[in-house]
Image 1 (cartoon, each protein chain N blue to C red):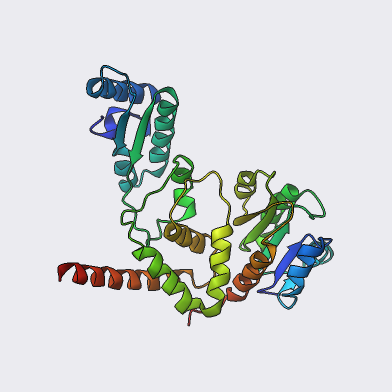
Image 2 (cartoon, rainbow over the protein chains, first blue to last red):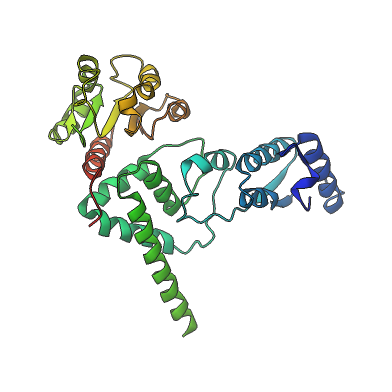
Length: 189
Length: 128
């Protein structure tokens, strides 16, 4: 697979012809006999572009990957280093990413983040938290990747901001760190 | 009027009228009439707009297009109740914050309306 985005970038955006040539050659090398059948690829470049804050280039690259996926039969996995508690984790930034994927998998699928967010909602909003949870669960966004409940909560709270959004997220981060520490301590016993 | 939910779909069926009636202190059921009759009023500044595609007094996408053109609604979250046949991606593209799909029987409407009333009551509050 390509080693740097420069291999397929033209004027700051991924170029289809270059991208296709580079990736097809890489696929041919690792799976020469059966084409792409059964191949699983990991796309690191989108994360590299995202980290460099080249958001539109990252989304464009995802679109090119999907174009390639339509023509070949392989599975593609991508990774983004995004702080779920950071302001960057917001609909305006992530819409393009979510529209170009089928599933979002959390980095730590142990339920800690969801527990921290629910605790934060309950502590911050009291009896009204349940009403918000109903809205978050019922919110329909068919163009997006299927995503875990915790990430849905963060995106919804940020996108439908009651005045307390920042406080809820920051309180959740506090609970999350404490739960992580508690988990580590239990694991170390 | 801050913190009030303006319901656009005032000729709603019994289900929505009933659900809204449970929160009448929070939900203004004649939302569209209010927007039409007091178009420039400062008082007409809701906390949330709830647009019901089924009972919208004019094509709902038209209303969604119009809302952002009014300065006073730019910051107001717009929630949409839509049947399964509606392409909600277009609603999101026009600025809807959340869309809630309703089947023909409109089951589960009451908890959603209650949730929206609870949400509206939170606007402007501080976390305890």
